[in-house]
Amino acid sequence: MNFAQIVRSALLTLQTQKLRTALTLFGMIWGTASVVFLLAWGLGLERMLESGFTRLGKNVVHAWPGKIGEDFTPAADRRELWFTPAEVEAVEKGVRNADLVLGESRGWYPVTYGSTLLTRDVRGVEPRHMHVRGTRIAAGRAITRADVGSRHRVAVLGDTARQKILGPEGRLGATIRILGTPFEVIGFFERVGTQLTRDADEIDEQVWIPITALHGIRPGRGADREVIDIVVLRARSRETYDDLKTEVRSILARQLGVSPDDEEAVIVMSPIENLKAMPIDQMRGMLFVLAVTTLGIGGIGILNMMLDSVQERRQEIGVRLAVGARRRDVVGQFFLETLVVTGVGGLVGLGLGVGLCALLGSLHAPDVIPLPILRAWIVWTALGVMTLVGVLSGLIPAWRAAGVDPSVTLRAE
Image (tube, rainbow, N blue to C red; front, side, top):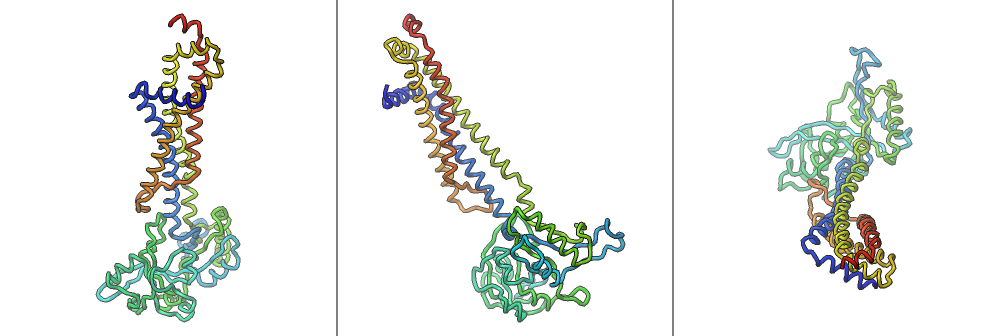
């Protein structure tokens, strides 16, 4: 039999018992669609989690002062620590595994506009904060070096802060008051969205002003008003985060005169730790196993259908063998028939999976549900698994057909 005849024979097998065929093909269709959809959904889930954790800033690392730990000093003498610009400069000069280092001051302060009075997360920042945090300006401009150098009283508002403080009619150039001091609104941030890792308040809720302007209006600790509340760094890579953490703690401990082993004195944290702690690789593997198992169940259905087909066509096989057909020809026929049946169900399932991914991917709800992300390797993986299932499902029926004894089948006829 040539290939066209084998295809016709396979299609005839599908038409013989329509209910059995429908149930068998449904398993194959659903299994292949599951491989495509679950792998794409897993990729989308991974992307959503990573995006949520990195909205605070990609590879951002925070270091802030605490108190000397009880293991290093009596509890009654646990003095409070704080940073100054000297600590920021020391870290910037000494650290090797970060490409950006800067100081940030912050506080929850009253912000007034007209009759509106709210307590907001106010950040004293440098221009480079835009690069560390990955924020973008939707309207107006960002804080510049000139603003920091001249202590300009200007402010940039997060998307939610803009709506709450200025209201729907608020515009650039409006004057707000922070701690009773007037600041001109010069810019609005683009919406950042939900952050899975919080740094006090979300960026959308924050008000940014030049760090020197904040130092000029807020009460100082003792005689020092230029207290740096936190050192912000951008790690060169996630792989070097542990080394960076050791570096930063060592430098700051030396500056503050405390032990580098005192984790309560200098606290270093990053969303990188959250990402490392998440079993993303294991989750992806679990989804793959689940999808392949579903497809394997569909393959078992095809295996049973082809075994039934061999049993029903024993006389046909016996006649072919009696008139000179070789057993390898019979093996090839039933093996290819199984591949054709598998291909019909698999390709329909592939189309269903791709279509479902495209449909859900067109929705705009990235902060609510993970949207599947379809990639070429996912399609090729589905095709590869489908082919493997077809091969395994075809071997047993093919060998069963080749083992038919012509004399027995002819006598039965």
